[in-house]
Image 1 (cartoon, rainbow, N blue to C red):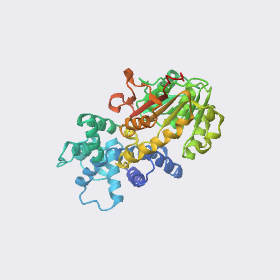
Image 2: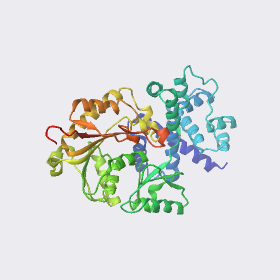
Image 3: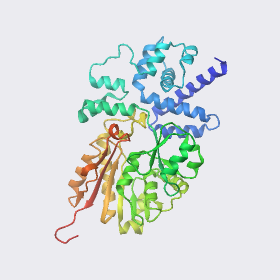
Image 4: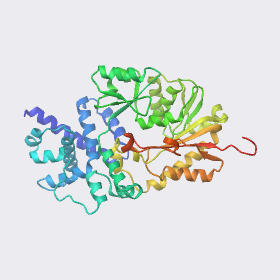
Length: 436
């Protein structure tokens, strides 16, 4: 092996270890942390480095406890520093992703073919047996034990293992065609002409799945607003809302605006979408995305000044509360998040979710519908929040929105191949006394 090739591998691993440690200590999600890091280091981190750093650190979080066990067993001496641990962890993650060959593994790092094969095939180290089924799953699927135990109690051992297995797979890239500019079929054809395997999603009318990881952001099609990156489950929430041209809609927790943008496209740019969020920087991001997408019926607004808007005083036809949540339905796409969760979240978040619903309800127009959505698989954030909200508001009822007339729309990741989502739809009951 040439010296410059060896230096490149070692340099990338040192950077990966730096990134890993930064993400691990920061509450910021990995995707946003990486975006900031790449921007700050744009002069020294090229596209090849960005791919290596992103995929390696995601893999290190996805397989964390499994890889840590191998680091402990394979190291000739105990790992003493955080930096050394991070570098070893990222090395084994890079092997898992195929970024480091068996030859590099042997020549540069001195490890044998047997360990390389074990990491690639996900074989546990000898003596890795655990006392209980939950402990074994937590180890093999690299999840916090408390969360595995929580899910085993809620869903059963079998379903929990299905969920963990799905989350440990590297997710496909899902896009959403911007129908204001291009049809989904034409977008699929465009990717296929570029040699990228693309297939239409089964549930969403707007989505397509890319079978290979590609840097789609650095393409003329993205810069021209032909598509957005958006999970099929997220698209399905908008599809269930069935927005009509001319309606007035409030996206209460709009964030970066993924759902607002799809709602706008479904409304053919007709009508009005008021987008609010407590994080003002998110609305700035939405403005940029809307401009690129050719959307001009989204109106970002300050939440505190909502009552000053004429459309708000009149009442919205539809209100979407895509509530801040634990994100347990997205842990395959955001593997760092599982290590940042805490049991206390499932007590604090429902309080916040109910408070947001309470603030939104007064702005619902007569005959309007209020949509409550999360990307969580937790009943505490889903069905139980709905129960409490209904008990506080007997004037409301839920409209069945699930498959086959089920009360709620739920996406269970191992079954649907999407992120996990929950949706409930509220409307005011018609009074038998006055016909209203």
